[in-house]
Length: 244
Image (cartoon, rainbow, N blue to C red; front, top):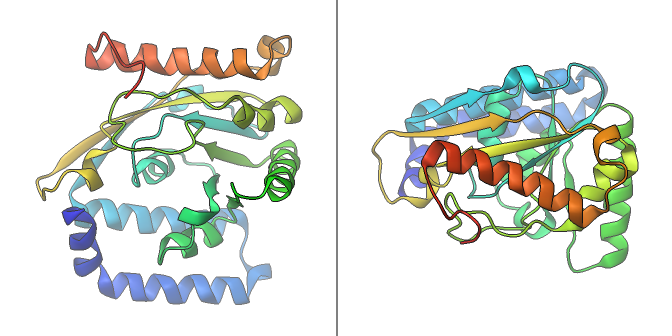
């Protein structure tokens, strides 16, 4: 967490400006398109990366669908995960996040800026409402980041089981599934160091609805996870990345 607090310290003037900017955007919502909001978010990520000495190499952007909505399903390693994906994803996208984690300072404003979805894991009715809302948004063309492991705890480059329910957003919207591989994404905020770090984001080939429509959610979850594990094994040379 040393790097996190270092970034807060050296970025404090920008953070104050950013929080004010987000408040202004919310008060004048009609003036700002999704693309406008996303530019502000990516600018914030770029400043955080620079001040935190974080480099993220991005691969496979040519695999991203050029039109329509889709869901990116990524392995989960830490607080930097979504920021790394956003840094490499040029078109506007947003996030589904655990409501409990979403109300921290800066995180809350970031989710609000991107009009992300907060999912309340303590209330089944609210969960369903959130999922139905995401399905409608993806159908309409929005792009979402979802972490189907449901959380993280020292996962590092190992991958826990994926929750099948997370894939309902794609199944019901009949849109592409984009597996996303995160490598060393835990390093920025888990390692107690200020040395420069490098992470990787890999966008894999999308799984089209025609390719998974005959499968159930558990089979889809396993297929997506297997593709992510295969890529991590290929790059890291790990023989066992099945579980933390």
